[in-house]
Length: 256
Image (tube, rainbow, N blue to C red; front, side, top):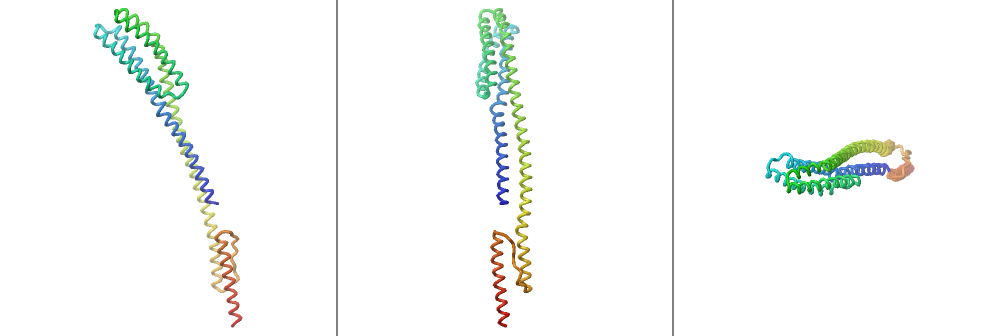
């Protein structure tokens, strides 16, 4: 029974530990496939948006020759390809409805900015003043997309922090649970070990006492252990042997 109780305690400790470790694993998976890559890619999307606007404004208001304007407009096109790659990768990290809704809002605002910027590129092909005017008209759409990009980054940052805190809390809880469970199992082991020692040493001490009495010729002592286990079987056999020995001694005395 004692070993059964100890086994149940160890089984309960294993079940609690498994539950805690599963929670840690779930948060780690979320951190690895959602929060951390989401934060990186949201930051990359915001950076691509900034680089896109920088290339347009430099072509409109900084570049002094046609070659420089063409170079920056080509850079704008390259940034769009980078943005599309980041966007595809970011969509693979979306697992929450609120994140999906925020991304849709950002993408809608970015598409508006991209359309306005495309008009600016067409205007540059006609004349630089028309291009400058068209670039100025992209400013409201760019500011709106930037604000939503900042929200996307902030929310992913918060999600990453929440996942990290959850992991730390789960680890701390697991350490506490394991420590408490280990202390309970250790205490139970000590108590059961002490009880087992008494259960064994008590009958053995009584057996030694009866044996010593028999050595001095006292065959009236009997074991009375009151056990129903192996010691009970030993008691029955030992008492029967003592009775038979006493009977033989009595017969020998009568014969003499």
